[in-house]
Image (cartoon, rainbow, N blue to C red):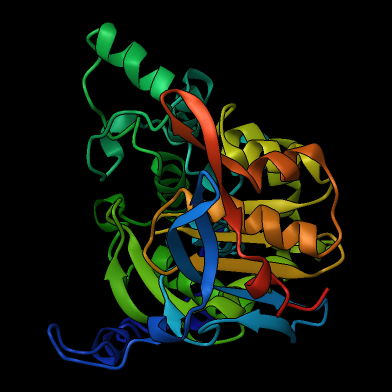
Length: 352
């Protein structure tokens, strides 16, 4: 199947996306100034530190149900975009489902079964990991990373957490008879199909074209738009969105890893789909069509699972995994002396 180029953006469409961004060094009023305290770090009963952030919760119809902070400000979803990007690839002809499609949506831990899955995707096009145009990295997972170092395995693009996404982009490009040498180019037909899907699912135009850590194009959307997109994917009954949601639900270990907060959250709440991103972004779609998106202002990853667990508990979900994630330990001399917890005052501003 070839991408119908009349259905995607023109080759010059992304020019305005570059120009829409502000010049480097230009002083602007920061949306982070309106973000409230979302997470507290408590040591021996004393609030030692805080993390500010924003939350957007959407209704099944895509409208904004409740929020705190700068929910309409543009922000980079980072890897939380991957389910949206996967929808774009499927609409452009990607022929994957099941665990391999889940891997296209993944920020994988670099566990052996995940690396083998990336190799399987590439092999469908008679390619190997040399086709991946990505930086070489160690696995995200500490155990997998230590195993690689001990065994003398060097950093590699394959082990980089975005290799499943890149393998999906390459496969999509091959299926459309395109040159893979420039598959990361923002004006490549594969990337145009991806950004069109982001625009559609978010119901707003993505802006501020940038380059993600893996080298692929990255666009800014609002937190509200990200929540809305996840609600739409999670509640889909057919089409590319349904295929993505089904893959994530059935194979959550491929989307993150067997020792990750996201994996535990998927197992705790049936029907949920979840994806975290760098700089402390986290999005969840619920099977009833509600969406939740969180951005921690300072980008620290320790606050994000705490905040998401707190929001889910506030919405009425009950599971021991949520209890554990909403109270991360603070240690002193190797013993628990406090917790990282959601800020109750801020959560109370969200609708239940």
